[in-house]
Image (cartoon, rainbow over all chains, first blue to last red; front, side, top):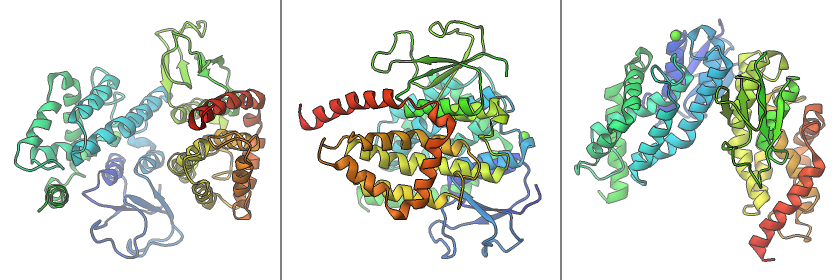
Amino acid sequence: MSEQLTLYTAKICPYAQRTEIALAEADARFTRYEIDLRNKPEWYLPKVPAIAYGGPQVPPDQPSPESVKLNESLVLVEFVADLYPNSGILPKDPVLRAKARLFIDAVSNKFSPANFSVVHNDGDPEQLVQALEHLQSLLPPTGFAVGEYSLADIAIAPFLGRLHLNLANDLGGFPEGKGEGERILKLLQSPKLARFQEYTKALLDRPSFVATFDKDHILQSGKRRFAELRAKKYGA
Amino acid sequence: MSEQLTLYTAKICPYAQRTEIALAEADARFTRYEIDLRNKPEWYLPKVPAIAYGGPQVPPDQPSPESVKLNESLVLVEFVADLYPNSGILPKDPVLRAKARLFIDAVSNKFSPANFSVVHNDGDPEQLVQALEHLQSLLPPTGFAVGEYSLADIAIAPFLGRLHLNLANDLGGFPEGKGEGERILKLLQSPKLARFQEYTKALLDRPSFVATFDKDHILQSGKRRFAELRAKKYGA
Ligand SMILES: [Ca+2]
């Protein structure tokens, strides 16, 4: 892989972190360009994350019309896996690949809506517990989603990292200072989710996750964002 | 690939046809088992389509616990592409693969909701035209979604086949006999969709599509199904 690769990303965005983890697992050389999502530069049109691939070497804030522009985080993760077959994030065995993609399907269609509801406080946190039990039922007895670390794990890790960080800091769409963050966190620590908790710990300890998760930055952004959401929901 | 492969499928189901087209493109040897979706056998639990892969040779209505069970049509299409690299349905070039997956993303998130609205008559058909214009904007000047026939084309063809067949026979959630099927068909034949029409024709002429699209069966099932939907919506 000798073409240039520029990643347009934002530390706060879990979708963008998926792509960053994939690039870290691949030991890829790339240009990282942080987009301020609250103050997007005028020349930047697509969503975050996006990759500009190939074309001439140019400053990232002057993307060349000759580079290929790609987006959608899960497409980008597969793209990185294809560019870097040695990253190991795409299993070699077709059955394991299919299982990884089925896990991702459950993340997108079962976990994500339940997680979104908890974050915005417009649903029963018990639905999140059920979604996690379902994901847990897909896990092998040990290891990651399909054994070795793969794109399946990359799909969920950024969301679990933010969920735990926010709840531990009483951040969410629920009212502040009523112990609601702690209460939801306790639900997630239920013994019936023991295997999923072990899995979550392994995800959040993974060096490629740690290297792409700027805890302080995400926490500060979260404080601002949830203060705004709460003001809208419950008055200032 | 020497493991046994059994496909549980239904002629009327566009999702199932995706998997059948992929298997046809791959010239795969497999056991095809038709599930009557209106009268599902008790032993059959998953959704259609599903693949049972590996394990001992068993009658399809007595699936072995030793075979791997996989579902989700797009996952199955990728699985077939991985089992049969010579099928050609997964482009070799990572950029073309990413473009194929972006096209599929647009099919799932833009085309499908608009198509569903037209079929059930609870939305403006103009939204479908806009979705098709968007897909058209992703097409290269000639050929299929990313040039050579690929999983991107497989993702949309079964839906376009059913849409055209139904509209041409005045079948849909709209009232019968008012020319509504013809009116929507005319919208799709607008000159601004010329490239998409050419693409649709190539999709529906593809031998793997023709071989897996039982027009009479689908039309008869559609007549029954839309009669029921219309009775529910507009009274008997
Ligand atoms: Ca690795």
